[in-house]
View 1: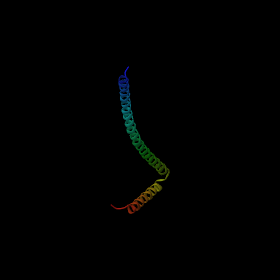
View 2: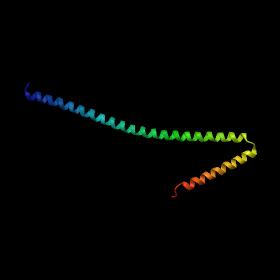
View 3: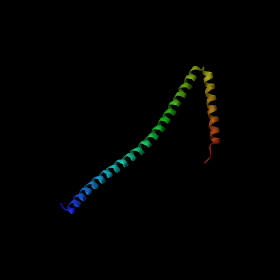
View 4: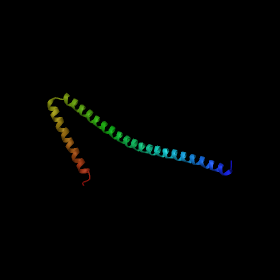
Length: 106
């Protein structure tokens, strides 16, 4: 076999290897982009899940407080219940007024 034929065979083999490496590299690029995209989605979904859990805990806490208030009111006699509700509304109005005074105006 002449030297030129050997070099041609080696070149053809290298070309096939080069093409196979390029195909593998392209496939890895696609996989890497897909992994990055999925990672970004997972991060966003994780943040949304944390926010939803916090909101759910807030709602559960609000329900628990309301149940405690209802239980307390149920134990009171009617006159005390009316007085308690009036004081509660008065305190809520004061808190709202304080918050409105401290919040910056637009």
